[in-house]
View (cartoon, helix red, strand yellow):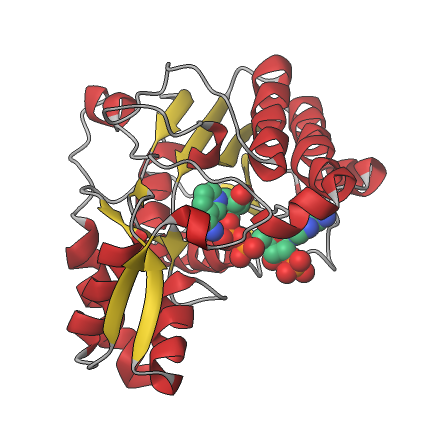
Amino acid sequence: MSPLKVLVTGSKGQLGQELCHVLINEGHDVTGLSRVELDVTNAEAVLNMLNRCQPDIVIHTAAYTDVNRAEKEPEKAFLVNSLGTENVALAVKQIGAKMVYISTDYVFDGTSQYPIREEEATNPLSIYGRSKLLGEEHVRRILSHYFIIRTSWLYGRYGSNFVKKILEAGDHAKTVTVVNDQFGSPTYTGDLADAIAKLIVTDQFGLYHLSNSGSCSWYEFAREIFYLAGKDVLVEPCKTEEFKSPAKRPAYSILEHSRWRDNGYAEIRHWSEALEEFLAHYLISS
Ligand SMILES: NC(=O)c1ccc[n+]([C@@H]2O[C@H](COP(=O)([O-])OP(=O)(O)OC[C@H]3O[C@@H](n4cnc5c(N)ncnc54)[C@H](OP(=O)(O)O)[C@@H]3O)[C@@H](O)[C@H]2O)c1
């Protein structure tokens, strides 16, 4: 495999940092750009940067990811997630590169009764979901050599995430309350970055659903985190309606990895196995 010139947007985010680490280890020539180094809402800056770097592929992880705040400032969410993505796709087209766009399970409305395949109808419930879906539409309209990867419930060693927050909550309380009526698949950024590393060296373009395998509710996820961390914290289940949250979230967003499997890849390992490995390292280093 010959090394690729890869440009990663949002390189200080939890997935962006993990991707830079994994791709450098794989021998690729990686340029990671934080928001300060490249604001994707600035079309001219995006085009200048891509012209200067001439990457083979751009992995666009940069996003406005605060799901609740997006309800209060929708114009900012659309500016980054939709227009920002359009800017990246237009520049990618101009230099003749490929693009990876990271999208989300929140493009679905949660009414499915079974794991959701790539071709199923979208219907986002939140501003965040709508803005990310519009980003997808820009990529599809502008490019043919793209990978759109919808993923879910990300956590990893970099940045802030549910695993770190719930462990911290457990340090200060004997009981934590977590919703037990939203189901999805926790996804370890290390495993997702490995999967992306496999795809980018191929021409198997298109839309992918990628997450760790298996599924759970947030309540079950929290229980497993405390169990694996050896922490004696009681997790109380509650319903979504008991929490006042500005953004609506899908009750069910378990993704079926049809395209990934159809292209000959093995299922990514079970979420609890990935969590165990992550915690073993994280708890020693923190
Ligand atoms: N987190 C999840 O559970 C989840 C689930 C499904 C899909 N996704 C998607 O996966 C991707 C990675 O998520 P993540 O959890 O790694 O997000 P993250 O940790 O919030 O990182 C996003 C990064 O984007 C940067 N950014 C924000 N606005 C920008 C702009 N205008 N120009 C350039 N960079 C900008 C942020 O910089 P600042 O920190 O300086 O703002 C941040 O470093 C995103 O596309 C997200 O939509 C995430």
